Image (cartoon, rainbow, N blue to C red; front, side, top):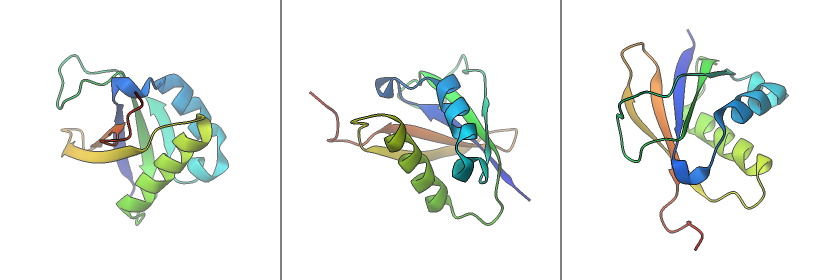
Length: 113
């Protein structure tokens, strides 16, 4: 059985979810792990800070360790944007539809001035 994750990007990352989805699915090593999809941004927030973009990873390989998925996401983002800040990924809660919510934020102390 595969897992599904919803990704929520903090506004200060200035992440375009559509661009993330397109680039993730065009990257063979990422696409083998999961298919990225667009999802609607919720009107209510489940966490702080409020996110600017949301995407989902559907069909994440069964048995893939969570930290391996986090590392893949981090590596993918760093390769796509020059001077991309250090990020951290936190699992906030499981959504009613069974997806896990991953909030992606800039790591404390890594923000540019």
